[in-house]
Amino acid sequence: MSRGEFAAAIGDAVDPTSLLRRIADRALELVPSADSVSIALVDDVGMRTVCGAGVGVSGVGTRAELGASLSGLAIETGRVVRSNDTSCDPRVDAVTCRRLAIASLVCVPLSRSYEMFGVLTVNSASPQAFTDVDVAVLTRVADIVSIAVGAACDLHRAGDQLRRLGHPAEGALSAVDGGRATGRYMTNALSPDAVARIDARLRVQRVLEDPEVLSLAFQPIIDLSSGAAVAVEALARFNVTPVRPPDMWFTDAHAADLGVDLEMVAVRRALDQIPLLPDGVAMSINVGPETMVSSQLAQAVAHVSPGRVVLELIEDKAFHAYPKLPAALLALRKRGVRVAVDDAGSGGSRPTRMLNLAPDLIKVDRELIFGIDLDPVRRSLVASLVRFASETGAEVLAEGVETRDELDAVRALGVRYGQGYFLGRPAPLDVLDLSRAVPLDPLEHHR
Image (cartoon, rainbow, N blue to C red; front, side, top):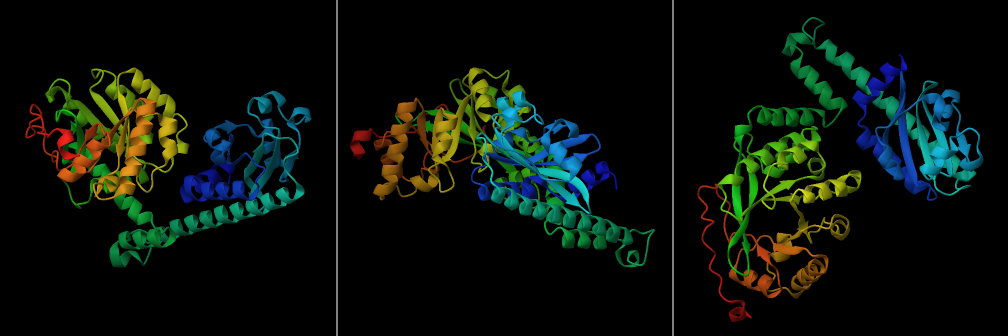
């Protein structure tokens, strides 16, 4: 098997963002002096970094020639290569290492059946960072990577052979079901979630082929000082079987690498409705970080009137995987798009997101708003968000306002905007009356 064929087999059998990424994360924990860990795989033209942890995340996807680095030397010789001080090591490009802040490194080759198929590389910005114990630990980690990848490739090849047995032209198994159920069974047995992923991808593809099955409902966002509608949030609805919540559709789409495509269907449909909104009412649209940094989104909002779009960045536990996100948000703001951070204060949200992303609007999660009139802890948390917003130039929106008492409580705390069933239920745009203000009693009356 050539290096190119082996690399292709690895690509089919192993998801670098799962198995190899987890291994890289653990390696970073095992060697505290390391700033970054990366794993590169070899093909017929060189090697490509497929995953990383720490500073190495930013290099994912980059290619290099085997003869141009210590990583390539480790692959070519099959031996661990170590540089204690790159500034005086003739084997390395000192200028590049200085630019990348790499003062010391260890490269451990990955092998299967005595054939080198990749390299595990650990870097540090400090010279003499790695001890002999560190090298021994990394060698054991590389052994685990080699075993895991080799086993995955063997299973993948065995699965191919077994699935061929089910082909109508190739054997006895075809007598039962023409090979279809047999192939499905073997796929599921050898890769436990494979059939579920295939089914999910097919479901999402059907929606992409017929975008009309994705409709939108719109929920008013109310200025709590005047009762006027200042925006509507576009909420996706899927009119197709199986009947599933919208978030499950988008989760499936992202798992099938179709997340941006499906989100953009919803985005474009929402943008098409802006001309139907009254003057001064904006369209709020949910997008994930992958969509937020995409060129598709930038092109879609390029010709929208400034101030008419609010993009809600939904919670994602992997924001660190999108280093271009702050720059993308800045470019969108320059076009007049406002940015909201969704689910602030929820159990899974991270306060540092607001520091890094500097949103124009902070949406307080409904789990903090539910019963806020009866819970001093909830009121204290929301009050802290209001103070944070006032000091950073942002505004606060309370989601899930469902009772008069909850409304009074958030208004008393200084929350500027509100959204929820008490203020307006989601509905088709032609059903909503956005020209009339929601009647709100004077705040002092409820204190």
